[in-house]
Image (cartoon, rainbow, N blue to C red; front, side, top):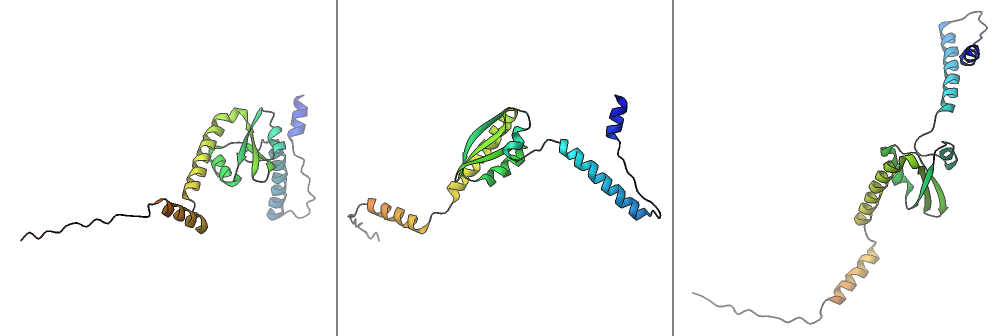
Amino acid sequence: MIQEEIDNRTVALSVKATKLTARSLAKILAAALRTIQKEYNKGQIPHGRQSVKKLMNHRAATSSLPLDGETRLFDQVARKWNVDYAFHKTAPGKYLLFFKSGQADAITAAFSEYTKLVMAREQNRRLPIREQLERFTQHTQKRPQHRERVKEAVRDER
């Protein structure tokens, strides 16, 4: 049993060395290190934005929320809160946001920050000129047409 673990963890490295220089040895060791890192990264769990399939492979319970609008803005907020999530497009501009149920508190905080940003963006967006003209005409139509002119009597106090 222990011997099997040692065999699985050892790296076989064979090189034909007639003239082995330091540079060629460094290249060989770098290639070996890359293969070791590839194998190590295969076993790691991905974080952040990922596909729905990868998120489901985490073997954790997932939940979903409907999301309308920009996904980029949510990406920025979710990176800040270190959330594992995935988007599934249901219609143009409509998405289902999948996330781990264990991260529900982080998702709630990220979602509240996201909604604040969306609301601030809506308030700060500029209206098109036609909408501005329509609002102005509606505003002027509401005002009374006849105004009374009031003259103030100016008295000379000398």
